[in-house]
Length: 253
Image (cartoon, rainbow, N blue to C red; front, side, top):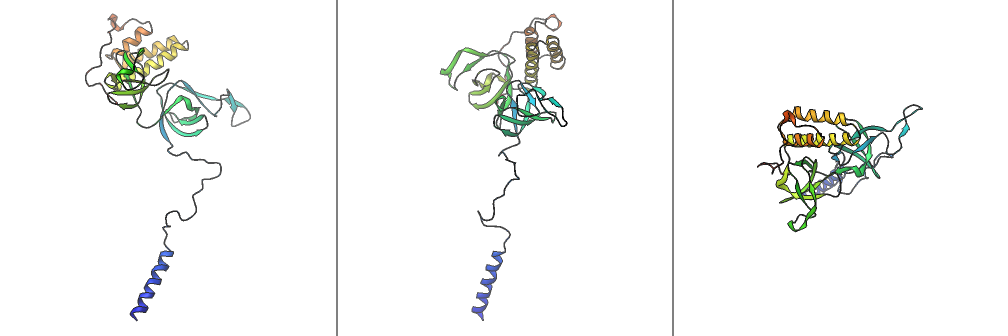
């Protein structure tokens, strides 16, 4: 009886294991996405606009596309400026579908995006030396980062940081030269907007951005540097402060 009971128990165990709801690793059919859907690993994900670009309805450079009705509609939804943070939703060859800060969704050229985790924003309060590599011997005497430039910090390799700039390849700067404070970065963003407005012939609107910077960020030296750049007199008739070294404790990425 004892032997029979042992055999019966073993058979019961095998039957129970065969009915387990948890398949062995690698067992069972693979999960297949719905037809026409190609999920991209790691999305959605944050990204930054690295160059002025148009947010479009469709992934094409065509100025007009088919609307919901029979009429064509403008393809451009908005202009996104450098430094705007978006959510990357989908990639399709050279295009990326993103969600902007106002929850609008559209397409833009993927080349105008800076993708990756851990990217942060910064600027410099005084001209900063540029290095082609994170080594003092790689100093580039022909290139500097000017005060008020909006920088996207890609990574840090002490004592250097790799930064994305508005034109040209990424550069390395000494991390201690970077200012990552909210007020300084905010002024750099407004300066980015004002420069773009001026470049597109909207001088009056650029000066309105300057007025906003003076109202919201009075006391930040970069504001009056922007005023001088736009040909405006310093606020209150005071002299434009000469840019000096960043203050002790300036944020380092």
